[in-house]
Image 1: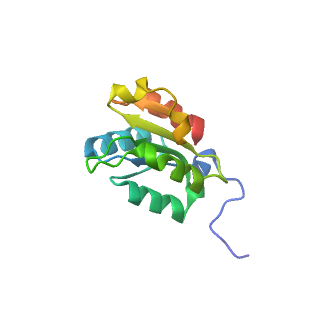
Image 2: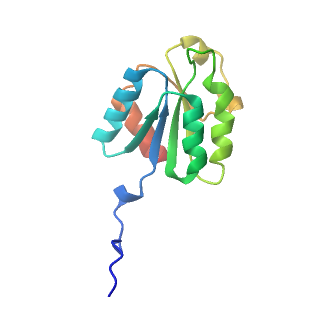
Length: 137
């Protein structure tokens, strides 16, 4: 009999989707990815919005959660790209959650009008990251 390398029963960890982290800050990418991997979540981190969109366009079914920075040093804003990520993942269940260290964004109120499911304030604590990964992945 031909062996395909696939087991007839896949365990739950195999079925988990990846968390995509889009943030220009190297420390944020490193620490968020590390926290998630410690809890057996798949995570991929990129520093630029265009790179994140490209990955998402290539395989939108791969992602269960996109953590999207709000402010980038070149003047780009993650809020402007949230709808693009949502559109790319509209046929699958994928959360788009903004992350920011600027309290003013939290005070502005309705970030859902930009296509985000939620907004989190940095620093991002491990327990919070894990709870969002569990919810969306």
